[in-house]
Image (cartoon, rainbow, N blue to C red; front, side, top):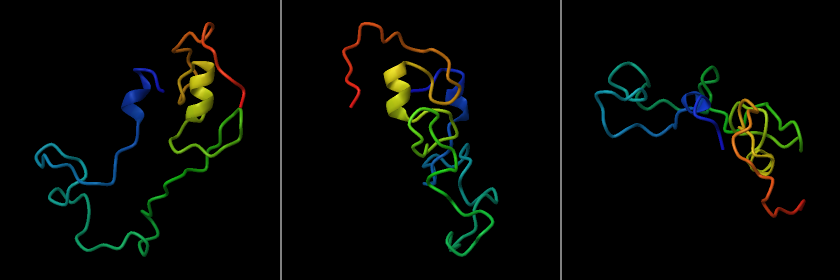
Amino acid sequence: MVCEKCEKKLSKVIVPDKWKEGAHNTTEGGGRKINENKLLSKKNRWKPYGQTKCVICKQQVHQDGKYCHTCAYSKGVCAMCGKQVLDTKFYKQSNV
């Protein structure tokens, strides 16, 4: 769960968009090379999990942020910036 401000910062998907004119990840504008093996090109290698870890549970976070999805929802904060988004005072949650 992220706040409205951090929705713009979410990373892009690796699959090309179907709408070609305004797409950022197509081959027409010089974005990607045709028949390029992503495993062999070291400089732009895609890493599914970043090096960032959750502040609370020390689990790897898949986006650039402070909290993993589980901890962000249980605390009611934005996963990227830590701003209070949801009031979880009356939620019935377990610690498991």
